[in-house]
Image (cartoon, rainbow, N blue to C red; front, side, top):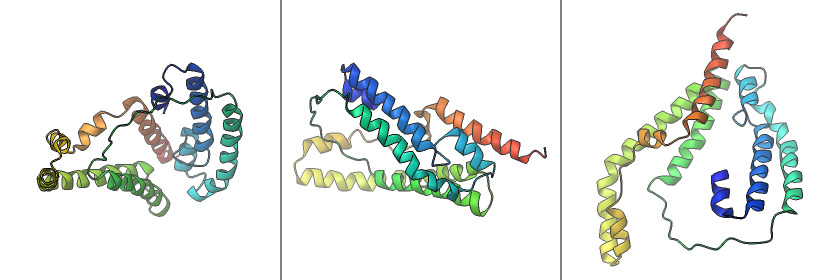
Length: 203
C-alpha cells in the first residue's frame, strides 16, 4: 500500500507521510475484527479461545477507530492532485476468477477450522491447490484463447492487440509465488504453524 502511495504522491512528502500513517491506522483497526487481520487475532482464533463469529461485533468499533483519525488527517492533506496518466489497462485472462478463488480460500480456511477442526493452514494450502488447478486450466486453454483474440485483432486491424498477444506468458503459480513478499508470507505461516504446534502440546 505504501508503494502505491509513493507512486501516487510522488514528491509530495506531506501527502505521503499522512497517507502512510493512515495505512498503519487502517491496518490496526481492520485487523481487530478479522482473524486474518492481525497476528494476535490469528493466534487467539487458531487456539480456539474465540470463534470466528465472535469477531463480527468488533466491526463497527473498528470502522469508527479508522474513520475518526482519517477525518482528522484529511484536514491536513494538501489540496493538490497528481498529474493524470491515461493508459490502457487490460485485465489478464482469468483475473476475476482468481479473485473469486481468493475469497473461496478464506472461506475454506474458516470452514475447515470451524466444521472439521482442521488447522487454518490446511484451508490456506487448499487455496493454493485451487490456484494450481485453475492455472492448469489456463495453460491448457491458452492456445485456443490466443487464436480467438488474434482473429479478432486481425478483423479489427488492431496492431497494438497483436503486439500484446505476442508477449503473453503462460500462467505459472510458482512464478507468481516467487514474486511474493517472502518475509511477510513466511512470518504469517510461521505463526500459524507455531500456534498449531503449541495447541497440540498437552500443557
